Length: 427
Image 1 (cartoon, rainbow, N blue to C red):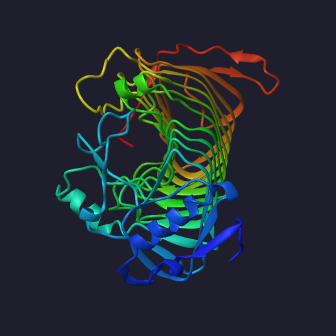
Image 2 (image 1 turned 180 degrees about the vertical axis):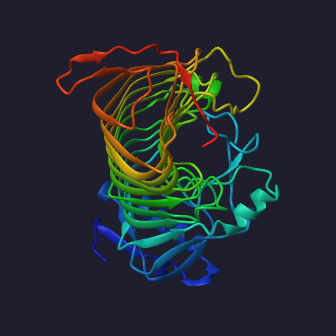
């Protein structure tokens, strides 16, 4: 294994046994403790050799590299009594599935700096099947935990690993800065694995996600920033995020989502060079009255849809709230959203932008779009309360809410009305 730190340890140095049965939590904890004493020397590296290393949740430390060899699998213990409880996220005020505390993540860290999780494509496996079954049977009293969660940290790197079968969200950076996620494979069953989002950047700043493959039971990526009044009060946006060169699939939700928990705001996001295949939706922005916040300066570029039910979705009535304390007058602001180079085949509804009188969608641009259709109904480019423009040739024909310009930027046709409503959820 390459040594990326001045000092390296092997997990077996601390008594670990990779037989898939022995519980190795103490070995991980002792290894992390040893590395925590090396911060002034540049930190340390923990090498996880080939084997199946069963463990309860454990914490990382600053200036640490966790390196998983080829054939190394870190397995999450399935009995929830080994999973510690944590307070609800301050920007959510609620466990997410239940009030009160939530389960922690299998691999956790907070207030860290300079952490790398990498390897020769080793695997972190949450063994989520038991959690999913108990969730469906309503046998859990607390919200399930993520697979990997890093909070209030900076300078974090995930690369060359596989994450699979998380109990809940898979990779959850929370209120972090300068995060890189590169060449990561994230897997969960496409059905019957509830809420197994791939990557959930949550109130994060300066993030790069690239060269990943994600196929999961919920959103492949969901950018968040807090929930209703709790997110508004916490006030940390997700901003300056670049997502590129991905292949994603979500039969239950969407390939790339923003929201619905976006009360701290989401801005300056670029999504480019993405293939979304065999999915319910390709890209989606979801919000509701009570969220507050904003979604603005969002760029989608060079997207390919292959066998997708709905291509582009903006939904403003995603009415799920933590409690009755939200302010229904706290409406989000949506605007400055562009779609360029959108292509594909086997798409049932290419566009569904469902604004409302309360939450209109402003300054939306479509340029260079051609999507092969599976249905030939007239109203498949669906709009309501949206203002914006179409530049050049767009297929299928856009809704009448949008102004039309030629390739040189000359106005060809003014919209009939931005408030026209042509939404059909029946197909």
